[in-house]
Amino acid sequence: MLERIHLSIIHEVEKQGSLTAAAGVLNLTQSALSHSIKKLEQQLGTDIWLREGRSLRLTQAGQYLLAVANRVLPQLDLAEERLGQFAQGKRGSLRIGMECHPCYRWLLKVVAPYLAAWPDVEVDVKQKFRFGGIGALFGYEIDLLVTPDPLFKPGLKFEPVFDYEQVLVVQKGHSLASLPYLKPQHLIHEVLISYPVEIERLDIYNQFLLPAGVTPKSHKTIETTDIMMQMVASGRGVAALPRWLVDEYAAKMNVVPVRLGVHGIAKQIYLGARETDVGIDYIRAFIELSRQSATDVAHLAGK
Image (cartoon, rainbow, N blue to C red; front, top):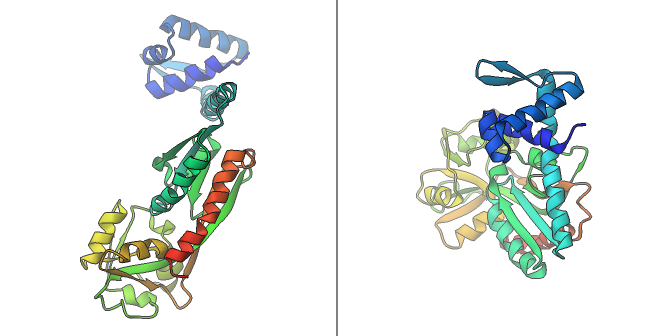
C-alpha cells in the first residue's frame, strides 16, 4: 500500500516547496502526482496534506510520513548503489564525514595509502558534517565519522584510532612560551583564537578554563587552520590545537606548543560507523589503517 514513490513525493514536495516543482524533479505530471497521493490518502483513511490557498500544509500523518521518508529514502538509495556496485564487480564506496577541523591533515596521511591498497573503493570526504555527524550516520549520508567527541548511541560503534594531547600554541617569543605548563589564569589577558564552534564543544573551555571560572580577554573564531596559525605566529592571539599538528607547523613557523595544565589535556580521535557496517572489509581496513597512523602521529609529537 505504502510505496517508495509516495515517500519520494512527500520528500520532494517538502523540499521543492510546490507540487509543480516536485513533479518536475520526479519526472511526473502534476496530476499524476496529485492522483498518487489522493489514492494513498483514500487507502490510509487520513489526509496527508491540507490546502491553504495555493500552498500545502502537512497534516500530523503527513509529518510522520515525511520523517519516515527522510530516514528510509537514503537507506534505499545506498542499498541500490551498493547492489549496483556488487553487480558490476566493484567493491563499494566509502563516504567519510569530518567532525574535526584539524583532522583533515591527518586524514590525508591515511587516505593516500588506503587508495593504493583498495583501488576498487570510491572515497569521498564530506566536511559539511563537522558538527552533525551522528545524524549523518543514522541517515546513511556517510559511512564513517571522524570525531574527537563520540556519542555512544545504540546502532553506532566508535573505535579510538589514536591518542593526542591538546596544547596551547603561542608565538615563539611569547611570555608563555617558556613555561613548562599553563594554568587557566595565564590566559586571562590573552586573545584566544578557535574554530567557529560552540564554546561548550571546545576542550580548552570545558576542560581547562570554565572549571576554573576563567575566561580569556577575548575570543575570536577563524575557519581555517593556516590562517589561525598565521595569526598566532604574528602575535595576534593564542590557540588550542593537537600537539602533533602544532609540531608540524612549528617546523616552518614561529610558533611553539605549551602544555595546558600540569598533566595536559588528553584526547582521542575516534572513527564511528553503523554497527551493521563495521564488519565490511573495506571499512574495517580503513579503521585499521587509521589506527596504524598513530605511530606517525606519536612520532610527530616527539613521543
